[in-house]
View 1: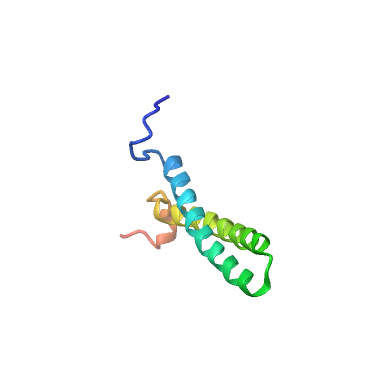
View 2: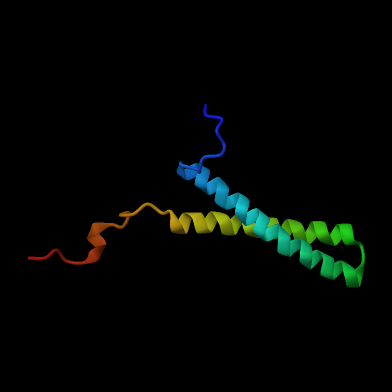
Length: 88
């Protein structure tokens, strides 16, 4: 097993994990900010940070997975019979 982690992700699974990680980070940051805003008015900062941070992480994870599937979908998966009649 290669231990050179400085290389770019090469397999589809590595890219999917990268999308998931970036999505979780990009979802956690706004979630934590929203938790700070709610905690400023309501109180209980730890509770609101964990609630909104967790929601942001889950939404970022799902978004990362969906973006990876959209952008890296295998080409040519459509059914040729659905295009219409064959040319004569």
